[in-house]
Amino acid sequence: MAKLPRLKQEIQKVIVGQDHILEEIIIALMAGGHCLLEGVPGLAKTLMVRTLSQALHLSFRRVQFTPDLMPTDIIGTEILEEDHATGKRFFKFNKGPLFANIILADEINRTPPKTQSALLEAMQEFEVTYAGQTYPLDRPFFILATQNPIEQAGTYPLPEAQLDRFLLYIKIGYPTAAEEFGILSSTTGAKKVPVNAVINGEDIRQLQKLVREVSINDDLVHYVSGIIRATRPDTTAVPYVKEWVRWGAGPRAGQALILTAKARALFKGRYAVIMEDIQAMAPPVLRHRTLMNFKAEAERVTSDMVTAELLKAIDRPKPGK
Image 1 (cartoon, rainbow, N blue to C red):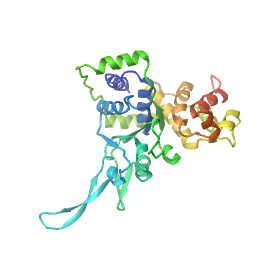
Image 2: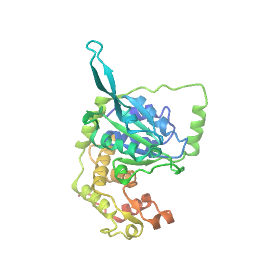
Image 3: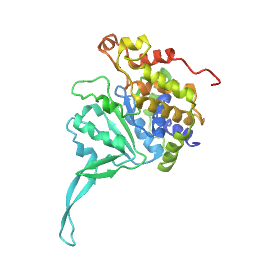
Image 4: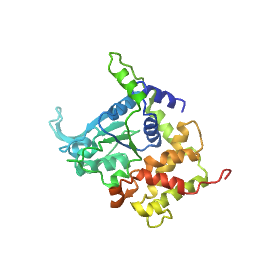
C-alpha cells in the first residue's frame, strides 16, 4: 500500500494534471476491473496507459482497433508446425496480444461487433477459448479501452452488455490553463524523464485481495443499494429519473460501486469506506449503466446529471450509525 503514492508520482513525471483520472485508473486496477476512457484526440489517453505500464513491472500490449480487425488478431490462432525429429505435423496455438497484463484497446468502437465481443470472455472470465481449448490469461489482467466521442461515422458503438463489463467509464476533459502550460513546456524540449517500475504483478495481486478486506458498514451498503434502485424508472421515487431515464442500473453496478469505494479508501490510506468514497466513485460507475431516453438525448441531459440528482435525493446514513 505504501507504494501507491510512488506509482502516481512516477506517472506524473510524464502526465501533467489529470489527477482524478489517474486515481480512477489506479482504483480500477486495484479493484481488478477494466476501464473505458473517452476523450477527444490529443489528451494523452494512450500516453497515460503506456506510462502506467512503465511504472508497473508488467507486460503491456497495444491493439489498434480497425474495421478490418478479426477476433483471431487479438486472441491468437493455430499454426501448423512440423516436428523435425519425427516429421509429424501438429497445430500449435500462437497467442495473440491479449496474453499480456495490461492491454490498451485503442479506439475500441472502430472495430465490428464480432471483434468487440471477442473481448467479453477475456474481460469477465480472464480466459479465452479457441478451437474448444481454454487458455487462461496472465494475471493481473487489465484492459484499458479508449474511444473518441467526436467522430461517429464508421464506428460501432459498444452494446450495453459489453459496456457493463467495464468497471469504470472515465471521461477525460481538457486541461486547465496551468496544466496546459506545463504540458507545452515539458513536452517540447530535448529532456526525457525516465519512468521507474515501482510495483510488480505480485504487489497488484496482493492489493486486489486487500481491497476486498476493506470494511464497509451496513448503512453504507443500504445507501449504495438505495442509489442503484433509484436509477430504475419503474421503481424510483425520484422524479428526475422518471423523466429522463429509460433503463436503470443492475446489481452489478452496486457491486462495482462498493468495490471501487473500497479501492479508493485503500488508495487514500484507509481500511474502511466512508461516504466520500461512494460519492466520488458513483459517476464513473453509473455513467454507462444509466441509459437515457430519447427526450434526454434531445435536451442533452446526461447520466452524470442524473447521478448528481440521485446523490442529492437519496437519504444519507446518519452519523454514528
